[in-house]
Length: 94
Image: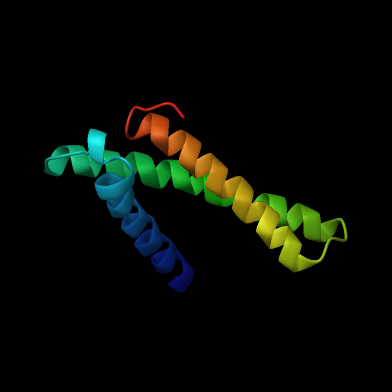
């Protein structure tokens, strides 16, 4: 439960930062647009989180040390989240 709450809080904080800083030129405005954007962002990041965990777990099972495995998983998840949230939340292609 604690990790789920932490993940939702982190996703929400990242959504707010992205909306106001990274995508300031296409900022989502209004309660309904913000809610829709947050849901899209959370769904996109959930897939990225699964890719992160899956890649790291597969590397650990194949004998790679957990630290580099976690780093590789984090990079995969971050690239996924950035690329897809850019398109599906803010309508931009990178």
